[in-house]
Image (cartoon, rainbow, N blue to C red):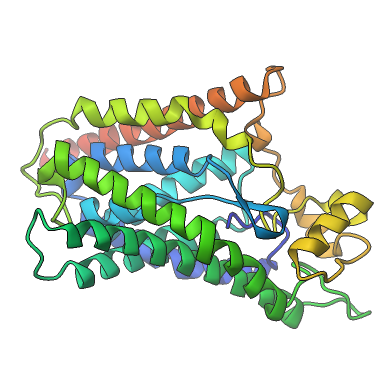
Length: 351
């Protein structure tokens, strides 16, 4: 679901940034006061959890891969507005430092996974759990359905964004300029794996995390946003659980293959890669070369640690683990800087 640079036209990227920007602004406005309390540490925690959980690649039909997002429980605990900030932060770190998702397409990726995903998860949970007792099993089912619905909505939006590109943007010869496959191929290719394996993984993970929180931090679940006065630190057991998941991230490299729609430009001219692309796309052969617009924009940004594989580390597993640690560290650093900046601004406003 991480759309790379080059797969969406510049105008499409501008539209998606324009759609995401007011949501980010509204989220900041609605959560600004709460960030002085317990919400900011929790936002940092869920951003880090989302970053880590997205590193666990899952094999999907057609030889592709997918991943969970971790948006459901973030939306349940933080509410949709703070959740979209948390997931957006994770996606931004992935794009900037690891090349997982593009810079031009960050607005689209955030809209799909952070914004639409947060509201879908929150809405589904509220609907299914309506009237349920705090200890009801229906709340666990609601969390599972929230995760399943959110990840599939995100995948569908990405598929639509892929699929409209060849309809709207072609060169003088009629060849696609950006993403090459139309809606009739993009939607089935994306949804086959997400309606089954990736969606099931998201549901199980959401239900499991919700159950863990209800057993260990019951005050965090059953509400949609944290009260301003709840300024106690985030429990260490939650950070400990995140640490355990982080240490398991090397398992994420076991799934071979590339996520659908995330092929490198050179894959279009490589015979073996072309066969894999066709197999994942309903046996529809890709273009014999990367679309010109895709090839031009793909090299726009070079991440310092591409594909979570630091060049100075020989072990792929250790490099993957180091990347996970670095990403979590960057999320903590950004939220710490944000907190300090807000405290400084608040002090200045009182003078």
